[in-house]
Image (cartoon, rainbow, N blue to C red; front, side, top):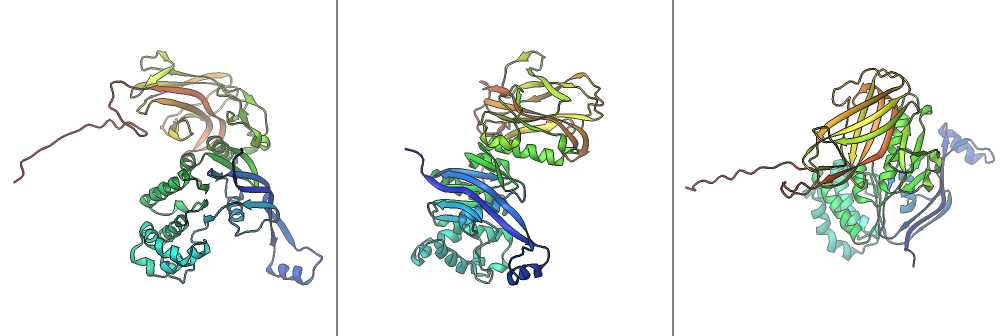
Amino acid sequence: MGEEIAISLKNVSKCYKRYTRPVDRLKEILLPGKSRSQEFWALRDINLEISKGETLGIIGQNGSGKSTILQIIAKTLTPTTGEVQVDGRVSALLELGSGFNPEFTGRQNVFFNGRLLGLSQKEIEDKFDEIARFADIGDFIDQPVKTYSSGMFVRLAFAVAVSVNPDILIVDEALAVGDIYFQQKCFQQIRQLRDSGTTLLFVSHDPVAVYKLCDRAILLESGQLVLDGKPRQVIDLYEAKLLKKNDVAPEKIEIQMSSNANGKKSQENTSDLASKEESDEIVINLPEVSIKFIKFFDEKDKEIESVISDQSMQLSIGLLFLKSFEDPHIGFKIRERTGEVVFETNTACMGEKVGRVNCETLLEIRFQFEIPIRPGEYTITVGVADGYLGEGLFRQTLLYAHNFAVLKVLRNQEAILWSGIVNLYPTISILTSNHV
């Protein structure tokens, strides 16, 4: 038996009319037959199915249609064309404080929104103390919402949204507001809902949050669905498109797919990426620069296939330049299996200059570092750019290859037992004194 579908969108589009002057809208109403507006399609032919219990990350640049698709699913917006089916109780945390009356107190808004979400008066009364405790805004619960800070606003809104035990929870960037303690509490609550079978739709510009929460992601661009896949690949494509957008010559950059991690690329256009498999990698590679090899060495320059945790190693990157560049820089990124970045840097960030590289030069650059990370397999991403502009920005992207090599980290049998992201090498001092 197939998976049950919580949300289904078939050929969904949303069109807005834009008018040069407000009076043009009135003229169009009073004098029908002549359009005085311009059409803006926020969404175009979106086909999407989300299974019950699935967590979906929605990624895209501003204006890509992320909020529009969420509002259509939440039924606060009607599509221009297409069919939308939603199975289950929906709780949505969309624009900051949406659905709250600023003149009402926090307490009044809890009851008002609770009823809108389908709870009875008795159910809200039973849950109120729990909601107030989660929001943790103290006596402000009985003050008008218009007096709240943005952090207090979202605290109360989130507390109400998760209190109804929704079948579908929609969160649109709201968790970017608030202090770290509240954000941690929110993510813990979201994980509990996810683990209990709640379907989650999550919009965020924070890749780490998408990696940790979502088992699937989609990339929207100009209202169209560009890629539907695992979060790692979708975020890789999103970042590649940002690099292209910020490049001095974006028209020269082609975003390609690599069928594996050895640099063999297919020539597919990004408009066809939605049909690609998860094994494919996102690659930016101008013909003037290519990776010839990646090797690992120990501190004594002996080539190795794996490294022991807590020990030193060297990452050697061989690059062939078929064009001269005045100010090239090389960087690398280490990622764990889901795509979360463990570490990244480049020659510019390290305050180093490669200097001019002439045409037909094979350049080898070695980074030396320790590996204070837990055992496992990690991927190496390589980036090459020309013209450092400061603050991590470059004039031109020459190469960006995700997951080009795999680094195997083995357990250090002599090290302490630890868990987490990085080994902090703790030591212990025990002091005693006589209590008087």
